[in-house]
Length: 141
Image (cartoon, rainbow, N blue to C red):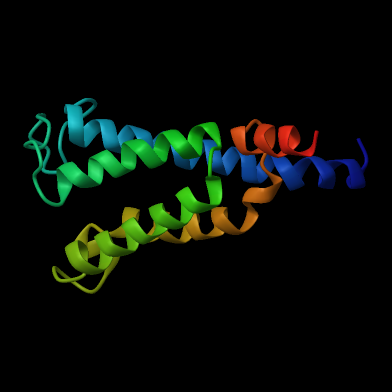
């Protein structure tokens, strides 16, 4: 395989892989908060967050919905921007008041995902294996 062909593959494979990884992890975070699956709530109690509990239960609802949208690649840019906003809110209003440094305040996940979602929103056009791509092709014909 030559360098040019590898570059063509990387142009779509990297954003697609990132979208799938970010989407699945976000989806899993949502199911953790809503249903108590995996290790339970963010507090480590092993139980789902109480129904309508602000902000954790609601964060789980949005994480689940946006995670599904990102995983299947539907409205990818909008979903990524909303997810980035959610993570920015989580960092600035939940983690930053505890301590300014992400490793001390538990906000490393939120900060990393915020920037990752913003990057994903910028490169979302080149993703494959997505419903956005199917919709674009059907609109052309």
